[in-house]
Length: 343
Image 1: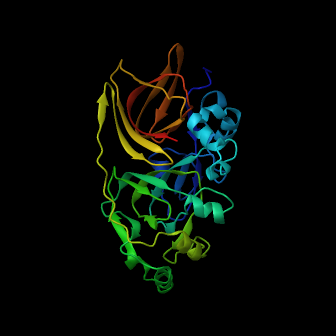
Image 2: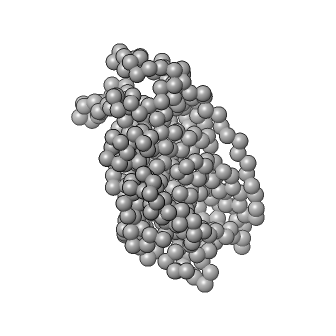
Image 3: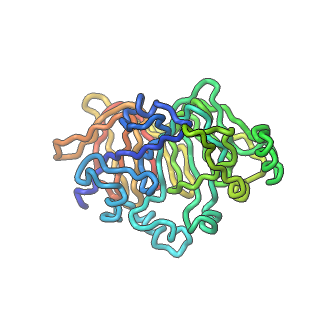
């Protein structure tokens, strides 16, 4: 096993979309010179917002460069998908992850939008993947809500006319949200994150978004953002949606840690892991050869250490760690909460 198979910290790219706030700099110490700072792409090989290695032997390289040089870091599951004869094998060039992880600070409402399915995107967007995503709510204002689908079945002409006359919101299902909620937003679902919500998002490696409605807002130059009404209606599921229910979650405990499954779908698996070690206690962690892991620290801090190595790696709230497949075993010490993501 190569000693290169150690976890390493990532540095994100930022996005200054008009609906963003300041919390990612203020509370997560991102130190990105953007105002507002709406999103940070924490683990990304997407060309629209790559992440970079911030520690270890690959420091300064983009994550894409590292994975091109060391494809086995992806694990046998991802490499097998890329090498298969399935349509998705053509969607990812060398060095690409199948997933993308973000922090999102919604100070204002996001646009009402739709992401295409894989099939629609392959047919209409030059073979790109679609976008199914999961939201884990890190914090929410008391009255925070999100849009999740339609209240009842509609047709394209009804929604098209409602957008034109400014009444589309009456057809949208709005759901209250609170800290620690999670939502799986399948491709094709009409949706929007509401104001006052701080979210960690795990999604397919795609940046395809079709805006259906944007409240007639203008940017700093007085221009309205582009809408993609016809594409959105073509890609959208226009059937009424049941109000999403929070799934049953069961914490499993062992010495120094607890974990629970948040979401498992075709594209990713996400667990929440809580580490709480005493002075001389540590949690042992190691990825298998099947898949890389991403550890997104959503609270607390601590250190990572290796046997016979005196150089500890410190992590803090907001940090993102990439763990190559078949990693060396390492120890986690501290009080911290992670999203543990597998591709």
